[in-house]
Image 1 (tube, rainbow, N blue to C red):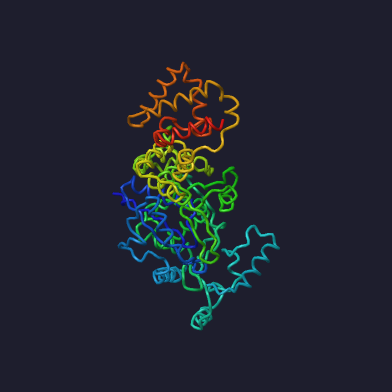
Image 2: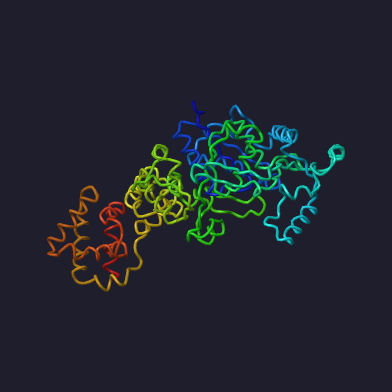
Length: 508
């Protein structure tokens, strides 16, 4: 019987969470939910030099906003706590020592200067790779080249050292990636990676293997940038005696620049004028503010839908998916190998679709607040009518108030091209007749009644309504195009409508 699916998202608190990291978290979440499994959140903070205050809290808030529910881990708790790697130091030290004792790892006392000299020497010799490996380690200062007494004395004296993996010289390392198929690497291409640093903290390579094993992780779904390290991780599972419970790997495709050439970066986002982080981030050192999808007006469900289709396709024409639909449809085998182009226009399109689906009552308070802040009287009922009229014309909720400028502001200028083409004697007669009809209007000022009144007035004046509608809109809004005019007038109200018609007759 196979083990229950357990996946993990393991970001480093070195700054704001990149949108590519959000996609990685999303794919883990979709896979776990689809398989009836659990998702863990682990904070990989072993690189204390790169730790950024506030980054962990930012990660947690980003996942909450996007709708990813963590079953176990940091911020939630669980049976495998602690979930910060910096708090699990003794666990890693124990496993590193076991590798030393079994002859699968060794102490290395090389200084930074000695390592630099080795690399320069190899580069000058045109070596295929200037790295610490099965060949070069025998010329370096480590427990493989030193006498045991000297090694012991150095450790007892407190001399700094690291623990390195003793990579085999001639072995094939294989893994079957769920996305990329079989990956074969010869061990001669794998260097003797540092497992435990001189500060006693592990590197990613040791910590993630130990934690994934102890936390029962069954599937490691992570970015393509970790694919070159995967053979090393397979070796570690073998050396630690955990090969039979090694998780399955799936390395996700890169997110590419909008042009499709190269990995998406913050600079690309800055140049393109779009966010690359889920939430706004203020650098605690410089105070520099980086924009976020949330603050730019994107709805979380739109971001989820957009990210899900960056590298995965269900094989159908369907584009709009709720989270539940994504869970039901997601298949890791359908994730692409090739990188996915980051098309911000597509993200805006998704947001437009979800804005249209949002109930008017949810968007109305934003419009009301914007209107009141600009000095306009705006009831919640009026705001809801504005939302209903205009939400299909915008990509973001905050744009509705901008689109509503002709509702809140009577025209002070009129489109000259429309004036030249449409403002004639029939237009003047039509506007006059409609004004007169409204002055005696006595019912509810709603779109259907307004339309009926306009139709009667045009019929009595002997004017074909279709020929004067653009001129009528011009008189009322100053423009030649816009949303449904009758609904617009319902929101403006009778008195304001009559006032605008009179102003147009006087000005044009």
